[in-house]
Image (tube, rainbow, N blue to C red; front, side, top):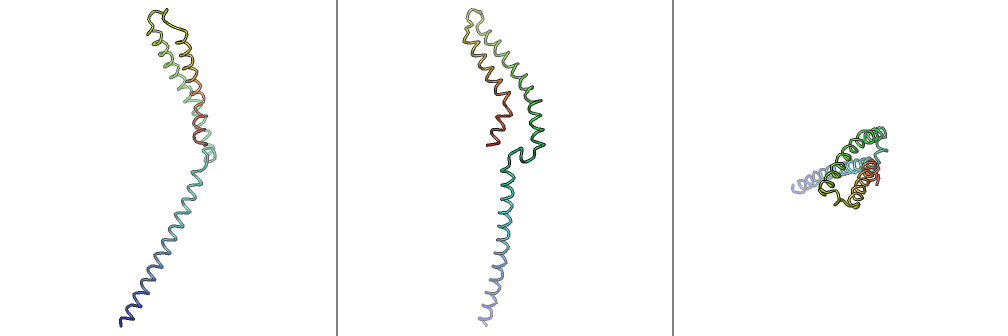
Length: 126
């Protein structure tokens, strides 16, 4: 009688283990396939993913964001120049190095603002 009970237990155990293994291997294959599909989508460049949205964002950046940043930059640099001259209350203390420093800061800021799109795309297209 123990032989019959042991054979039945082994048969049931093998059936359950086989079913669980086939379900898990199917699930792992499905997960691996989904990860591969996602990696293909993540690996695309922004322009390759959706070109129309990419060009719309580029146009928004160039036609709206850069002019707004230019206005803010003009205000900030004007205030900086006024404060720099006001710190040297008598204009005889103002040296040419201060003006050159202000021109250099302005040129660097203008260069960064005008090339914002190229900088951002350089980060994403690496």
